[in-house]
Amino acid sequence: MRPIVLVLGMIVFGLVEAGPTAGQEVGESVTLTGCLVQEDGDGDEVEFLLENVSGAEVTAEEIELVPAEGVNLAPHVGHTVEVSGVVISDDDEDEHEDEDEDEDDDENDLHIRVDRLGHQATSCGNAPLD
Image (cartoon, rainbow, N blue to C red; front, side, top):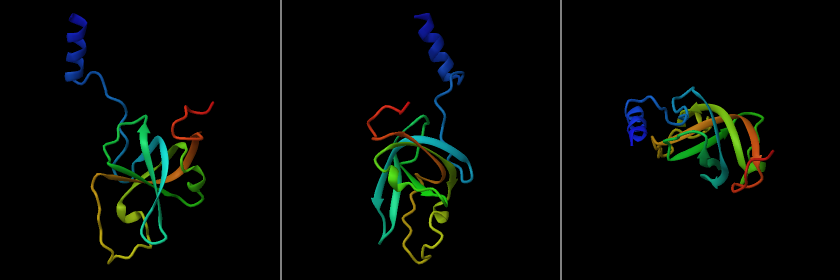
């Protein structure tokens, strides 16, 4: 009984940290692992999302990935990947977007400009590759 009380006390007083939290401030570097998903956006636009994220606590409802120059996400759709990049604002997501376009910004979305992609597994249900 005493060890349980000690552990609960440590949690309450913040002596035991929760898992890492993904950087959610614009300009902050972040590395996440999850399932790469492709969705159709407006018109011919394609959106890449990271789902089933592990290795970090993320409070975002949706994690949208924006590839940096030279990064090709398409071949990895449906795979488990590790992505590293920088958190960007929704305004930076598409520099060619019309300003008159309706903005349905959701403050709970996270947008990451991906500058590095690591392949972890050939599907989203597999264990990481050795």
